[in-house]
Length: 67
Image (cartoon, rainbow, N blue to C red):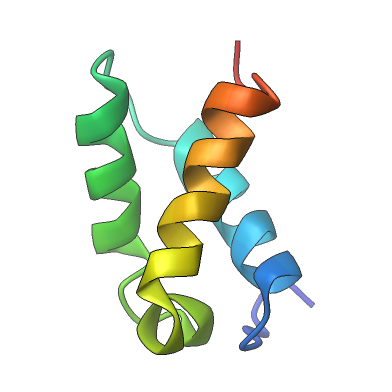
């Protein structure tokens, strides 16, 4: 299932989390940009970049998922 990408927030969040864990960068904004570069072909990021950014920021800053 990891090789399947769907145009929805859940698929994006799973891909985002995996990419986030594999990037070494202390600047959170820069790290988000690097993750988005890696995920540039993800259908949800392509079709809905504004919501993809909001999801990324929510996961990092509101949920504090990666601290």
